[in-house]
Image (cartoon, rainbow, N blue to C red; front, side, top):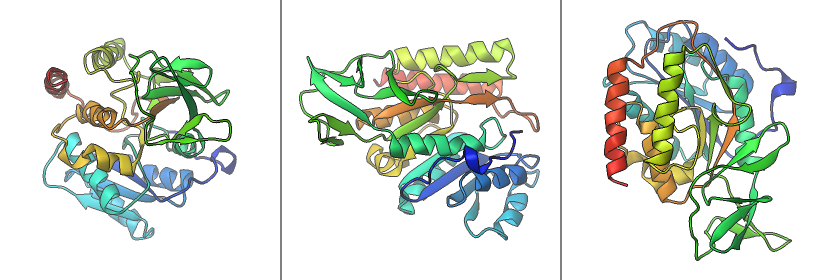
Length: 307
């Protein structure tokens, strides 16, 4: 469990309203402390807990916190499945007219103190691009039209290795700057385990291999332009989720994380990655069973065949 964020850890407050969505199933051991850490990390955000009717009383514990914090809301679903829960949270962000939607796991695998860094990257980082032979050139290197990596140590944009995309017209989200180079808005920030500075703590070798294979498949077969396609710590521009048709996602399991990136790529969302440390849970049990992993891989194969 991470240490509480200090004032010095927090980034400048983001512009626009923020909804933090946490999807839970049997997280009674984590939820109260997680809500405390979320509120410390981002005092002005609204928080939505989407609980899949946990038999361990997760929702009841969250509701006790909500009694003392009017900006916490708890929705209990009768259905189960991470995909449906994430869709529910995304729709709440769209219906609530938020500017940013932040998603993270409910088991402290993601450190809430990292949220300000994701929001800071989304709201204060931009890339400047010019057209060169059909390519986008971002910062000082050739890049795709979709994704770059933000190096947190130097605050410098570093390009990702993914397929280049020809572009005949300047994207709508690129606005001219004083030096004549278009400035692109950022639509998705991914807390990434697989860029420089990112890491995984506590996973056995088998789990690491499985994760790498899933992400390699997503990069090559789904043609996603980011290295960490299966991590759920992300910050989305809500307007882009609306454009991508987040309400029409079909995946009910973990493959929803790849499906939403496919939809966002189709509407030319600009994605970046910032490094995070993913720490395996210390309390409670993982919901990713072998059966669920196989089912999600099957869904990703279906998604790949549609590409």
